[in-house]
Structure formats: C-alpha cells, structure tokens
Amino acid sequence: MKRSARRLAFGLTALAFSLTTSVAGVAGAHVSVDPSSQPSSGGYGQVRLVVPSEEDDTTTTAISVTLPSGVDLSSVRTLPIPGWTATTEQAQSNGSERVSKITWQANTPESGLKPTEYGVFAFSGGRWPAGTTSVTLPTEQRYANGTVVSWNEQAADAQTEPEHPAPVVTLAPESGDHDAAHGAASTTDANSTVVQQQSPDGSTWWKVIAVASLVIAAAAVLAVAALWRRLGGNSSELDAPESSKASENSDSAETVAETDTAVHSGVGSKATADHR
Image 1: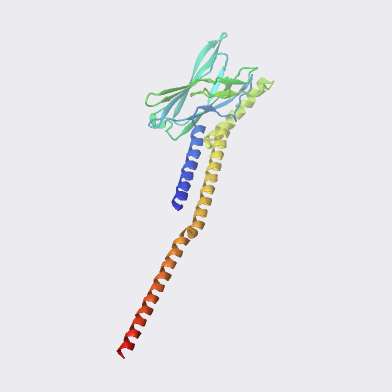
Image 2: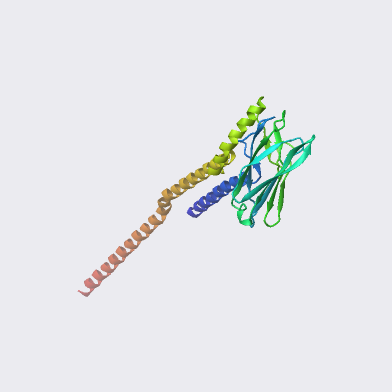
C-alpha cells in the first residue's frame, strides 16, 4: 500500500513537471509579434518580433520579414542588436519606393540564437495601411546548418492553427493626426531602444506565459508535499499491525516458556516424592 502511494507521488511529480515544461514549450513554439507594441492604422509605430530558436543542434543565424503588397512603408528603422546586421530591400509601388523586406543576419554563427534562447527583432516605420486592423508578416528563419523554416501559413478559422503560422501585427485605431503620430512614434522608438537594451525580454506575452508556468509549478509542489505528509502520517498506522504481531509473538513465547517451567517443576516434585 505504501509503495503504491509513493509511486503515485512520483507519478504526480513527473506529470507536474511535464505540464510545466509543455506550457513553456508551447509558449515559445512560434515566431510571433509582441502585442504590447501596436503601430497606428494609417500612421507609424514599432513592431517587435519574438523569435525562438527551435533546432536542438544548431543556431538561428538569420531572420527575414516580408512586407506584403499593399503595405507601403516608405521608411523603416531597425533596433541595433549586438552581433547582428540589419538590411532592407526596396520595391516600386505606385511610382514610389517602399520597403519590401527586412533581414537580420548574425555576423558569425556564434552570434546566433542558441537552442535554449530566443531573440526580439524590432523595427519602426510607416505609414501602415489605413482602414485595416491587422497585417500578416511572412517570416523566414534560417539556421547555421542550412535549415530554413517559413512562417507563412494562415489559419483557416479561429479554432485551428497551422504548423508554421505567419506572425500578425495588430494595428491600433487610426489617430487622425498622422504627422503627430509620426513624431510620437519617433519618441517612443527612442525610449523603446533604451528599454530593449536593458530588458530584451520585456514582452507582455512572455510575462504571462512565465507567470502561468510558475503557478502550475507551485500547485504541483503543494500537491506533492501534501501527499508526502499524508504518507508520513500513515506510516506508523501501516506499521502498527506488524508491531502488534511482534508483540503477540513475544507474549506467546513467554507463555510457552512459563508453561514449560511449570511442567518441569511439577515433574521434579513428583520424582522427589516417589524417592522418599
């Protein structure tokens, strides 16, 4: 009975660990956009891509983001990342140039994202399309071993998620004063650069995932601790029958010994009497 209970405790511990790590794994499974930064519809703003490195034996060395047709950003600024170089490509649109692709390249394989790491790749620009609420940004993730993962799939409906979903930028409501929005975006970008350098993992999404993981882990620890306390309290009760049995055996042995002594004593007395 004690063995079964202890096996149950070990099983619960393993299950809790599995749930905790699976939550973290799901959280970091896809390239995504930090929802705490939203460009203005028809205006300017910052986009922060959260990129986990998923290959076990190599590093992420390049990230390329394609700005689809209809997203005519005339200017883009990238946030500097130590050990990485950012470049942009231009394309013609309605008689003028627009930024069509942004690429971050690690200067050396050692500068890439290791299997246990993720990176935040940020850029600011505009103007974003007016009259729309979101923009899909197909992204390619390249590894040092030559593997290329294309994050470019779109969900068929709200209940399903493709294997490699494209990150989606949610646009804030149109401000109305585009020139003012441009100036505000510049100030925000300057401040965000400092925050990014101090805390590169400042994504609200990642904080929520971290808190959820901690809550699950704490609940698992409390459950296992309660079970172990229960096992400790019942151990004396479980051992009691064995102690009682040993005591009974001891009492029986003493009774037998006393009986043998009495018998021998009686026999000796009778022999003495006959001799006399």
